[in-house]
Image (cartoon, rainbow, N blue to C red):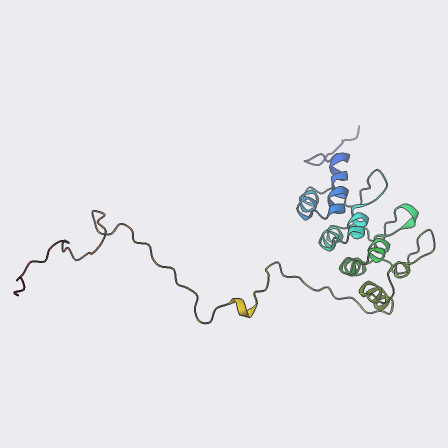
Length: 195
């Protein structure tokens, strides 16, 4: 008799469908967690949509990048033979389209109506230009967005920043505050001034 081998963690259909719903709203942290659990990246929801298609339609470029790196099929067709690139082009999502093109999406894929992704993009927009240039062989470049905001020059004061003052705490052996010299406070001893 054959032996049935299961993963260390069983992933049910509900968990797999959570990937599609998280991708559709651009929930990066949930998508990352599910991908770490090795959820099938090409899973479909009840309507037949994949996570990559939903993320592309919503313009969630970071989620699209994560799904492609996890091995999602960029040319997997959903209803009406639509590819993720069709969804990104029709929504005008330029960065998403760039990720899909670099991930191997077919530029001349036609949907049920015979339209290619460039036909769904508005003419002479950034998305249309990227698709047009990619059709000519120009590889799109993805602009890295820093997670740390850039601080304008006018917000930085001249010179060094303010130095933090040291807080006075317990000093000396017995925790006395104040001078270490050992002199006690109070009246000074010595001669009085004459009038």
